[in-house]
Amino acid sequence: MSAELPQLERLIADAAERHYGARRRVPAPRLSLVAGLVAAAAAVVLAIAIFPLRSDEQPAAPPTDPAKGLAKRYSVFGGSPKPSRLEATAVQDMQGTLDTQKPVTTRLLRRFHDGGFVVLAGTTKHGTAALCVWEQKSSGGSAGCQDLSDVPVADPWFAYGDGVGPNTDQIVALVPDAVVYMKMELKDGSSRIVGIHRNLAYIEAGSPICRVVWTFADGRTGQERGPTRAEEATPDDPNPDVCD
Amino acid sequence: MEHLSDDRLLALTPAEPAAFAVFYRRHERPVLAFLRHRTGDAELAADLAAETFAAALVGARRFRPGREPALAWLFGIARNKWLHARRRGAVEDRARRRLRMEPLVLDDDDLERIDRLATTEWATTLLAELPAEQARAVRERVVEERSYEQIAAAMRCSPSVVRKRVSRGLATMRAAIEEES
Image 1 (cartoon, one colour):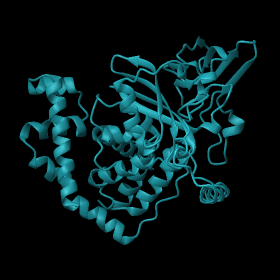
Image 2: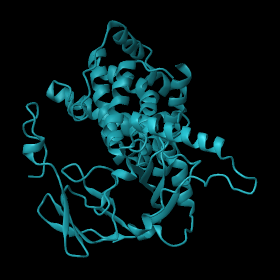
Image 3: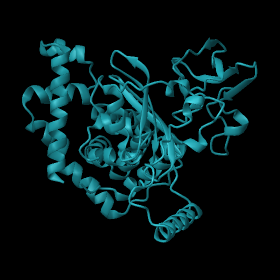
Image 4: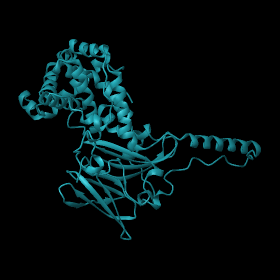
Protein backbone atom coordinates (compact mmCIF):
# COMPACT_ATOMS: atom_id res chain seq x y z
CA MET A 1 0.00 0.00 0.00
CA SER A 2 1.43 3.43 -0.93
CA ALA A 3 1.05 6.44 1.33
CA GLU A 4 -0.90 9.59 0.45
CA LEU A 5 1.93 11.63 1.97
CA PRO A 6 5.17 9.77 1.21
CA GLN A 7 7.20 12.59 2.75
CA LEU A 8 5.41 12.18 6.09
CA GLU A 9 5.85 8.43 5.86
CA ARG A 10 9.62 8.95 5.46
CA LEU A 11 9.76 11.49 8.31
CA ILE A 12 7.90 9.10 10.61
CA ALA A 13 10.05 6.09 9.60
CA ASP A 14 13.25 8.11 10.20
CA ALA A 15 11.93 9.37 13.53
CA ALA A 16 11.06 5.82 14.60
CA GLU A 17 14.56 4.65 13.78
CA ARG A 18 16.14 7.59 15.62
CA HIS A 19 13.86 7.30 18.65
CA TYR A 20 13.90 3.55 19.15
CA GLY A 21 16.75 2.38 16.91
CA ALA A 22 19.28 4.50 18.77
CA ARG A 23 18.05 3.00 22.02
CA ARG A 24 18.21 -0.47 20.61
CA ARG A 25 21.82 0.17 19.57
CA VAL A 26 22.19 -2.77 17.29
CA PRO A 27 24.38 -1.09 14.69
CA ALA A 28 25.30 -2.38 11.28
CA PRO A 29 28.84 -3.75 11.18
CA ARG A 30 31.43 -1.08 10.67
CA LEU A 31 33.45 -1.15 7.48
CA SER A 32 36.65 -2.00 9.36
CA LEU A 33 34.88 -4.92 10.98
CA VAL A 34 33.60 -6.12 7.60
CA ALA A 35 37.12 -5.85 6.15
CA GLY A 36 38.48 -7.78 9.13
CA LEU A 37 35.88 -10.51 8.69
CA VAL A 38 36.59 -10.75 4.97
CA ALA A 39 40.32 -11.08 5.69
CA ALA A 40 39.66 -13.70 8.35
CA ALA A 41 37.40 -15.64 5.99
CA ALA A 42 40.05 -15.51 3.29
CA ALA A 43 42.64 -16.82 5.76
CA VAL A 44 40.35 -19.69 6.71
CA VAL A 45 39.72 -20.60 3.04
CA LEU A 46 43.46 -20.49 2.40
CA ALA A 47 44.18 -22.67 5.43
CA ILE A 48 41.60 -25.22 4.33
CA ALA A 49 43.08 -25.29 0.85
CA ILE A 50 46.60 -25.82 2.19
CA PHE A 51 45.68 -28.18 5.02
CA PRO A 52 42.57 -30.09 3.85
CA LEU A 53 40.62 -31.97 6.53
CA ARG A 54 41.40 -35.62 6.91
CA SER A 55 38.42 -37.89 6.45
CA ASP A 56 38.27 -38.63 10.21
CA GLU A 57 38.38 -34.93 11.19
CA GLN A 58 35.20 -33.02 11.98
CA PRO A 59 34.29 -29.73 10.31
CA ALA A 60 34.49 -26.43 12.22
CA ALA A 61 32.57 -26.07 15.49
CA PRO A 62 29.04 -24.60 15.31
CA PRO A 63 28.59 -20.85 15.89
CA THR A 64 29.42 -19.65 19.39
CA ASP A 65 26.53 -19.20 21.75
CA PRO A 66 26.38 -15.53 22.85
CA ALA A 67 24.96 -16.71 26.18
CA LYS A 68 28.26 -18.41 27.01
CA GLY A 69 29.76 -16.76 30.04
CA LEU A 70 26.64 -14.78 30.91
CA ALA A 71 25.88 -17.08 33.86
CA LYS A 72 28.88 -15.57 35.66
CA ARG A 73 27.15 -12.18 35.50
CA TYR A 74 23.48 -13.19 35.65
CA SER A 75 22.80 -16.40 37.55
CA VAL A 76 19.47 -16.78 35.72
CA PHE A 77 21.51 -18.04 32.76
CA GLY A 78 22.96 -20.85 34.88
CA GLY A 79 21.35 -24.23 35.37
CA SER A 80 19.39 -26.29 32.93
CA PRO A 81 16.92 -24.48 30.70
CA LYS A 82 13.26 -25.45 30.90
CA PRO A 83 11.88 -23.79 27.77
CA SER A 84 8.34 -22.51 28.16
CA ARG A 85 5.76 -21.54 25.58
CA LEU A 86 6.34 -17.89 26.52
CA GLU A 87 10.02 -18.20 25.58
CA ALA A 88 9.09 -19.76 22.23
CA THR A 89 6.75 -16.81 21.58
CA ALA A 90 9.52 -14.39 22.51
CA VAL A 91 11.93 -15.99 20.02
CA GLN A 92 9.27 -15.87 17.32
CA ASP A 93 8.54 -12.21 18.06
CA MET A 94 12.19 -11.20 18.00
CA GLN A 95 13.08 -12.91 14.73
CA GLY A 96 13.05 -9.52 12.99
CA THR A 97 16.03 -8.54 15.14
CA LEU A 98 17.73 -11.79 16.11
CA ASP A 99 19.00 -14.38 13.66
CA THR A 100 17.05 -17.45 14.73
CA GLN A 101 19.21 -19.70 12.53
CA LYS A 102 21.91 -19.15 15.15
CA PRO A 103 21.72 -20.14 18.82
CA VAL A 104 19.25 -18.08 20.86
CA THR A 105 19.27 -18.74 24.59
CA THR A 106 16.19 -17.75 26.54
CA ARG A 107 15.32 -17.59 30.20
CA LEU A 108 12.00 -16.80 31.77
CA LEU A 109 12.57 -13.90 34.16
CA ARG A 110 9.10 -13.45 35.53
CA ARG A 111 5.69 -14.88 34.81
CA PHE A 112 2.33 -13.15 35.18
CA HIS A 113 -1.07 -14.74 34.87
CA ASP A 114 -1.28 -13.17 31.40
CA GLY A 115 2.35 -13.18 30.22
CA GLY A 116 5.78 -12.39 31.56
CA PHE A 117 9.33 -11.25 30.89
CA VAL A 118 11.90 -13.25 28.92
CA VAL A 119 15.59 -12.49 28.38
CA LEU A 120 17.14 -13.60 25.09
CA ALA A 121 20.82 -13.87 24.22
CA GLY A 122 21.47 -14.29 20.52
CA THR A 123 23.05 -12.92 17.38
CA THR A 124 21.54 -9.99 15.53
CA LYS A 125 20.92 -10.05 11.80
CA HIS A 126 24.03 -7.85 11.60
CA GLY A 127 26.09 -10.61 13.21
CA THR A 128 26.67 -9.03 16.61
CA ALA A 129 25.96 -10.75 19.94
CA ALA A 130 23.01 -9.07 21.66
CA LEU A 131 20.83 -9.26 24.73
CA CYS A 132 17.09 -8.60 24.54
CA VAL A 133 14.40 -8.32 27.18
CA TRP A 134 10.92 -9.12 25.90
CA GLU A 135 7.70 -8.41 27.73
CA GLN A 136 4.20 -9.64 27.10
CA LYS A 137 1.03 -9.01 29.05
CA SER A 138 -2.58 -8.92 27.96
CA SER A 139 -2.40 -5.18 28.56
CA GLY A 140 0.58 -4.71 26.26
CA GLY A 141 4.00 -5.79 25.19
CA SER A 142 7.43 -4.36 24.64
CA ALA A 143 11.03 -5.30 23.98
CA GLY A 144 14.50 -3.81 24.13
CA CYS A 145 17.78 -5.08 22.68
CA GLN A 146 21.36 -3.98 22.93
CA ASP A 147 24.67 -5.23 21.62
CA LEU A 148 26.23 -7.36 24.30
CA SER A 149 29.38 -5.25 24.11
CA ASP A 150 27.32 -2.18 25.09
CA VAL A 151 25.47 -3.83 27.99
CA PRO A 152 27.00 -2.64 31.29
CA VAL A 153 29.06 -5.40 32.87
CA ALA A 154 28.61 -4.47 36.54
CA ASP A 155 25.65 -2.06 36.51
CA PRO A 156 22.00 -2.77 35.76
CA TRP A 157 21.00 -2.58 32.11
CA PHE A 158 17.83 -0.53 31.62
CA ALA A 159 16.50 -2.68 28.85
CA TYR A 160 14.10 -0.24 27.21
CA GLY A 161 16.72 2.45 27.02
CA ASP A 162 14.52 4.97 28.80
CA GLY A 163 16.77 5.51 31.77
CA VAL A 164 14.85 7.56 34.30
CA GLY A 165 13.26 11.01 34.24
CA PRO A 166 9.94 12.83 34.09
CA ASN A 167 8.60 10.65 31.28
CA THR A 168 9.47 7.32 32.91
CA ASP A 169 7.22 5.70 35.44
CA GLN A 170 8.48 2.15 35.22
CA ILE A 171 11.75 0.30 35.61
CA VAL A 172 12.65 -2.75 33.54
CA ALA A 173 16.30 -3.63 34.11
CA LEU A 174 18.46 -6.71 33.88
CA VAL A 175 20.52 -6.64 37.07
CA PRO A 176 23.85 -8.46 37.57
CA ASP A 177 24.21 -10.71 40.61
CA ALA A 178 26.71 -8.23 42.05
CA VAL A 179 23.88 -5.76 42.74
CA VAL A 180 22.09 -6.62 45.96
CA TYR A 181 19.74 -3.69 46.52
CA MET A 182 17.95 -1.12 44.40
CA LYS A 183 15.98 1.96 45.38
CA MET A 184 14.17 4.60 43.34
CA GLU A 185 13.32 8.22 44.10
CA LEU A 186 10.11 9.64 42.69
CA LYS A 187 9.40 13.19 41.58
CA ASP A 188 7.28 13.78 44.66
CA GLY A 189 10.37 13.17 46.82
CA SER A 190 9.38 9.74 48.12
CA SER A 191 11.59 6.64 47.85
CA ARG A 192 10.73 3.00 47.21
CA ILE A 193 12.65 -0.25 47.09
CA VAL A 194 12.78 -1.89 43.68
CA GLY A 195 12.43 -5.66 43.93
CA ILE A 196 14.94 -7.82 42.03
CA HIS A 197 13.87 -11.32 41.08
CA ARG A 198 15.80 -13.66 38.77
CA ASN A 199 18.04 -10.76 37.73
CA LEU A 200 15.04 -8.65 36.72
CA ALA A 201 14.22 -5.35 38.39
CA TYR A 202 10.67 -4.44 37.47
CA ILE A 203 8.32 -1.91 38.97
CA GLU A 204 5.43 0.27 37.78
CA ALA A 205 5.82 3.36 39.94
CA GLY A 206 2.73 5.23 38.74
CA SER A 207 4.60 8.55 38.88
CA PRO A 208 7.84 9.90 37.40
CA ILE A 209 11.04 8.20 38.55
CA CYS A 210 13.82 10.74 38.97
CA ARG A 211 16.66 8.64 40.34
CA VAL A 212 17.58 4.98 40.82
CA VAL A 213 20.37 4.01 43.19
CA TRP A 214 21.81 0.52 43.48
CA THR A 215 24.18 -1.04 45.97
CA PHE A 216 26.75 -3.74 45.30
CA ALA A 217 27.57 -6.56 47.69
CA ASP A 218 30.80 -4.78 48.67
CA GLY A 219 28.91 -1.62 49.66
CA ARG A 220 29.71 0.48 46.59
CA THR A 221 26.82 2.26 44.93
CA GLY A 222 25.83 3.33 41.44
CA GLN A 223 23.04 5.51 40.14
CA GLU A 224 20.98 6.60 37.15
CA ARG A 225 19.27 9.98 37.30
CA GLY A 226 16.96 11.96 35.08
CA PRO A 227 18.20 14.94 33.07
CA THR A 228 18.43 18.31 34.79
CA ARG A 229 17.01 21.60 33.55
CA ALA A 230 20.49 22.79 32.61
CA GLU A 231 21.03 19.72 30.46
CA GLU A 232 17.66 19.74 28.73
CA ALA A 233 16.86 23.43 28.19
CA THR A 234 17.10 24.70 24.63
CA PRO A 235 16.34 28.15 23.15
CA ASP A 236 13.09 26.68 21.77
CA ASP A 237 12.14 25.07 25.06
CA PRO A 238 13.73 26.93 28.00
CA ASN A 239 11.50 25.20 30.56
CA PRO A 240 11.60 21.49 29.77
CA ASP A 241 9.80 18.96 31.90
CA VAL A 242 12.58 17.69 34.18
CA CYS A 243 12.94 16.36 37.69
CA ASP A 244 14.86 19.22 39.34
CA MET B 1 5.44 -7.50 8.83
CA GLU B 2 2.38 -6.41 6.83
CA HIS B 3 0.37 -9.35 8.15
CA LEU B 4 0.84 -8.44 11.82
CA SER B 5 -2.01 -7.01 13.87
CA ASP B 6 -1.96 -3.37 14.97
CA ASP B 7 -1.36 -4.45 18.56
CA ARG B 8 1.63 -6.51 17.54
CA LEU B 9 3.06 -3.73 15.35
CA LEU B 10 2.92 -1.27 18.25
CA ALA B 11 4.42 -3.81 20.64
CA LEU B 12 7.24 -4.51 18.18
CA THR B 13 8.02 -0.85 17.44
CA PRO B 14 10.57 -0.31 20.26
CA ALA B 15 12.57 -3.33 19.15
CA GLU B 16 11.84 -3.06 15.43
CA PRO B 17 11.11 0.59 14.49
CA ALA B 18 10.16 -0.39 10.93
CA ALA B 19 6.96 -1.83 12.40
CA PHE B 20 5.67 1.68 12.98
CA ALA B 21 6.03 2.55 9.29
CA VAL B 22 3.67 -0.33 8.53
CA PHE B 23 1.26 1.00 11.17
CA TYR B 24 1.52 4.46 9.59
CA ARG B 25 0.78 3.24 6.07
CA ARG B 26 -2.15 1.21 7.32
CA HIS B 27 -3.87 4.12 9.07
CA GLU B 28 -2.69 7.24 7.26
CA ARG B 29 -5.80 7.56 5.08
CA PRO B 30 -8.50 7.26 7.73
CA VAL B 31 -6.62 9.64 10.02
CA LEU B 32 -6.13 12.22 7.25
CA ALA B 33 -9.77 11.86 6.17
CA PHE B 34 -10.95 12.28 9.75
CA LEU B 35 -8.82 15.39 10.34
CA ARG B 36 -9.67 16.91 6.96
CA HIS B 37 -13.35 16.36 7.71
CA ARG B 38 -13.01 18.00 11.12
CA THR B 39 -10.85 20.96 10.10
CA GLY B 40 -12.06 21.55 6.55
CA ASP B 41 -8.45 22.41 5.69
CA ALA B 42 -6.05 20.00 3.97
CA GLU B 43 -2.89 21.73 5.18
CA LEU B 44 -4.08 21.81 8.77
CA ALA B 45 -5.17 18.18 8.51
CA ALA B 46 -1.69 17.14 7.32
CA ASP B 47 -0.05 19.12 10.13
CA LEU B 48 -2.32 17.50 12.71
CA ALA B 49 -1.77 14.05 11.19
CA ALA B 50 2.01 14.53 11.45
CA GLU B 51 1.70 15.44 15.14
CA THR B 52 -0.78 12.61 15.72
CA PHE B 53 1.54 9.95 14.31
CA ALA B 54 4.55 11.47 16.09
CA ALA B 55 2.68 11.31 19.41
CA ALA B 56 1.58 7.75 18.65
CA LEU B 57 5.19 6.83 17.89
CA VAL B 58 6.42 8.27 21.18
CA GLY B 59 3.57 6.53 23.00
CA ALA B 60 3.78 3.20 21.15
CA ARG B 61 5.64 1.54 24.00
CA ARG B 62 2.91 2.49 26.42
CA PHE B 63 0.00 1.39 24.26
CA ARG B 64 -2.01 -1.20 26.15
CA PRO B 65 -3.97 -3.49 23.87
CA GLY B 66 -7.18 -5.02 25.10
CA ARG B 67 -8.76 -1.83 26.37
CA GLU B 68 -9.64 -0.63 22.88
CA PRO B 69 -8.54 -1.26 19.28
CA ALA B 70 -5.33 0.49 18.20
CA LEU B 71 -7.21 2.50 15.59
CA ALA B 72 -9.56 3.86 18.26
CA TRP B 73 -6.49 4.76 20.35
CA LEU B 74 -4.99 6.54 17.31
CA PHE B 75 -8.24 8.39 16.62
CA GLY B 76 -8.28 9.42 20.27
CA ILE B 77 -4.86 11.03 19.83
CA ALA B 78 -5.98 12.68 16.56
CA ARG B 79 -9.08 14.05 18.23
CA ASN B 80 -7.08 15.45 21.14
CA LYS B 81 -4.65 17.14 18.78
CA TRP B 82 -7.53 18.64 16.84
CA LEU B 83 -9.26 19.87 20.01
CA HIS B 84 -6.00 21.31 21.30
CA ALA B 85 -5.45 23.12 18.00
CA ARG B 86 -9.00 24.48 18.07
CA ARG B 87 -8.57 25.80 21.61
CA ARG B 88 -5.13 27.29 21.07
CA GLY B 89 -5.52 28.33 17.45
CA ALA B 90 -2.27 26.53 16.63
CA VAL B 91 -1.21 22.96 16.02
CA GLU B 92 0.91 21.50 18.78
CA ASP B 93 4.33 20.27 17.69
CA ARG B 94 5.66 18.86 20.96
CA ALA B 95 5.96 15.26 19.80
CA ARG B 96 7.61 16.27 16.54
CA ARG B 97 10.13 18.46 18.39
CA ARG B 98 10.88 15.61 20.73
CA LEU B 99 11.51 13.37 17.74
CA ARG B 100 13.49 16.12 15.97
CA MET B 101 11.27 15.74 12.90
CA GLU B 102 11.76 18.11 10.01
CA PRO B 103 8.77 20.23 9.01
CA LEU B 104 6.37 18.68 6.53
CA VAL B 105 6.43 20.52 3.21
CA LEU B 106 3.27 20.05 1.17
CA ASP B 107 2.73 20.74 -2.49
CA ASP B 108 -0.53 21.22 -4.38
CA ASP B 109 -0.72 17.54 -5.28
CA ASP B 110 -0.50 16.53 -1.62
CA LEU B 111 -3.26 18.95 -0.66
CA GLU B 112 -5.41 17.78 -3.55
CA ARG B 113 -5.03 14.15 -2.44
CA ILE B 114 -6.05 15.04 1.11
CA ASP B 115 -9.06 16.99 -0.17
CA ARG B 116 -10.03 14.03 -2.31
CA LEU B 117 -9.98 11.81 0.77
CA ALA B 118 -12.51 14.09 2.39
CA THR B 119 -14.70 14.51 -0.67
CA THR B 120 -14.93 10.78 -1.08
CA GLU B 121 -16.05 10.88 2.55
CA TRP B 122 -14.45 7.59 3.24
CA ALA B 123 -15.15 7.44 6.90
CA THR B 124 -18.83 8.28 6.43
CA THR B 125 -19.23 5.98 3.48
CA LEU B 126 -17.46 3.13 5.19
CA LEU B 127 -19.50 3.59 8.33
CA ALA B 128 -22.67 3.51 6.26
CA GLU B 129 -21.59 0.22 4.73
CA LEU B 130 -21.23 -1.47 8.11
CA PRO B 131 -24.06 -3.43 9.69
CA ALA B 132 -26.15 -0.94 11.68
CA GLU B 133 -25.10 -2.22 15.10
CA GLN B 134 -21.40 -2.14 14.26
CA ALA B 135 -21.69 1.33 12.73
CA ARG B 136 -23.44 2.64 15.81
CA ALA B 137 -20.86 1.07 18.12
CA VAL B 138 -17.94 2.49 16.11
CA ARG B 139 -19.51 5.94 15.85
CA GLU B 140 -20.33 6.17 19.53
CA ARG B 141 -16.97 4.80 20.65
CA VAL B 142 -14.57 6.43 18.18
CA VAL B 143 -16.31 9.65 17.22
CA GLU B 144 -18.31 10.44 20.34
CA GLU B 145 -15.81 8.87 22.76
CA ARG B 146 -18.45 7.20 24.92
CA SER B 147 -17.34 4.44 27.24
CA TYR B 148 -18.08 0.81 26.41
CA GLU B 149 -20.30 0.66 29.46
CA GLN B 150 -22.34 3.68 28.32
CA ILE B 151 -22.74 2.29 24.82
CA ALA B 152 -23.67 -1.12 26.22
CA ALA B 153 -26.38 0.45 28.37
CA ALA B 154 -27.75 2.36 25.39
CA MET B 155 -27.63 -0.66 23.11
CA ARG B 156 -28.91 -3.03 25.79
CA CYS B 157 -26.06 -5.48 25.55
CA SER B 158 -22.88 -6.27 27.46
CA PRO B 159 -19.70 -4.15 27.16
CA SER B 160 -17.87 -7.16 25.70
CA VAL B 161 -20.41 -7.34 22.86
CA VAL B 162 -19.83 -3.63 22.19
CA ARG B 163 -16.07 -4.22 22.14
CA LYS B 164 -16.54 -6.97 19.57
CA ARG B 165 -18.76 -4.78 17.42
CA VAL B 166 -16.26 -1.91 17.51
CA SER B 167 -13.38 -4.23 16.76
CA ARG B 168 -15.17 -5.94 13.87
CA GLY B 169 -16.43 -2.64 12.48
CA LEU B 170 -12.96 -1.09 12.50
CA ALA B 171 -11.46 -4.22 10.94
CA THR B 172 -14.03 -4.10 8.13
CA MET B 173 -13.34 -0.39 7.56
CA ARG B 174 -9.63 -1.00 7.43
CA ALA B 175 -10.01 -3.86 4.96
CA ALA B 176 -12.18 -1.65 2.75
CA ILE B 177 -9.60 1.15 2.86
CA GLU B 178 -6.84 -1.26 1.89
CA GLU B 179 -8.93 -2.64 -0.94
CA GLU B 180 -9.69 0.88 -2.19
CA SER B 181 -6.02 1.83 -2.17
